[in-house]
Structure formats: structure tokens, C-alpha cells
Amino acid sequence: MILLWLDGGHDAPANMACDAALLERAASGRLDETVLRLFTFAPPGVTLGRAQDPARELDLAALARAGVRWAVRPTGGRAIWHEDEWTFSLVTRLGPAGWAHTAAAAYERTGRLLAAAFQRLSVPARLAPGSVRGPGAPRARNGSAPPCFASTARHELLLEGKKLAGIAQRAMGGVLLQQSSLLLGDAHTRLAEFVPGADRAHLTRELRDAAAVAGPWLGSDRSLARFAEAIASLLPEARRGMPEGVDAEAPRHR
Image (cartoon, rainbow, N blue to C red):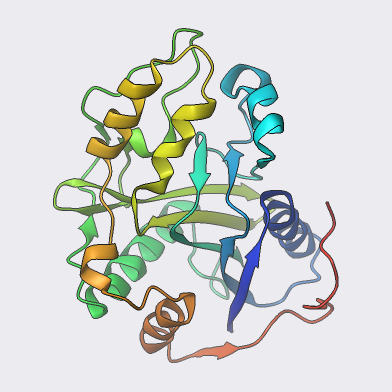
């Protein structure tokens, strides 16, 4: 069974805490179905991959002065500024009753679902053919990793040859968590304001040039509900709702 959960907007710590909790519930056998959670970041914020060092990758003092909330993702990958995007997570068991038998197969199935959903919305997205380094994506002077939208991996999405969506995942104890950001506009370039040691004007240009955005194809309706409808049309076996034991009105654990 697949549960399609239109969760809405939360800040970075709340969104990451929710996904971590879903992964833990699945690993402990307390989540029987695949959960596909659709959400946004409100207010905008930053996430890092779980292996990254926040003090190395981000100017934490600048984020604090700007009042920007940040969090470390339960999955891998690199730094992302979350704004003007659709975001989703998928938590599932691996095996015959889950989303896919293996993590690699799950990666491919999710990529194909995303491409098909965008195509239903008249966005000509396609799967990336393989691992591609984004053009000119430099490391910051302090050696921090290039941001997420400066590179593309197999089964991530391309639009007109540029990265539209990245997928990070983590497998543990026979369960899997995937997380993905789907760009609607260029707000992701704001990450350059908070990368220590970077030539920020240059990094902003590189982030803009390396990534694609779906907004121009979507028109005025960029609602998360529209994305949910496209996903639902491709997953007739899915039901709408939220996992049992989740109170949508309760404040998230921070």
C-alpha cells in the first residue's frame, strides 16, 4: 500500500525531524506502508547531507543573523537552499511488499515517477543518463563540497540538459528513505550567500547556470496540490491521508 501525504509547509528542522521519525518507525516495524510525503519549506531554509560538517559547509553566524533555520538531512547529498520548490520524501520497506526490491531499483522507480509526473504537467523532464559534473561547479576556498544543484547523478532529473531534481537516499535495516527537491524557480541560488569562503557572485551564477527550473512550464499554478494530483494519477493504488499516529495540527519536534 502507498500512502500519499500532502503535508504542506514547515521549517527545515521540522521537515527533517518528520522524515527521520518516519524512517525510524519503518525500521522498527511500526510503519507498514510506503509513505510518499509532499511538502515545502516555510519559511525558506537550508539542509545539509548527513555526512557534512555544518561549520565547514555553512556560514552559521550569517545564517543566525539572517534568521534562517537549517538542519541536517537523514540522507546524504550536499547543501541545498529550499525555497520556490516542491519537495518530497519517500519511506518504504525494501522487498516484494515495498516500493522496490533494492535501493538501486527504488532510485530508478522514483526517478521515472518524477519524470512522468512533470511530463503530465507539460514540463519536458527526463532521467539523467549517468553521472555528470555540473559545468564549472567550484569548491569554495575552504574546501567545502559543491552544492547539490551543481552536479547530477543517474536517475536524477534533467530539463533542457540541466539538473531539475536531485534525489538523496538512505537505506537501513531493510527500509529506505528518499528525499528530493524539485526546483520551480532560481531561489536555490541564495545558498551562495551562506557558503563560507566562496566567491558568492560567481557561485550564484554557477548555481543558476547548472540547474533548471520548472516554473516557466507550469504557469501561474505552482501549488503543491497540483503536483500531488499528477503523482496520484500515476499511482492509482495510492490512498490519500497521513500515517496513523501523526497529528497534523501538533507542532513538530525540533
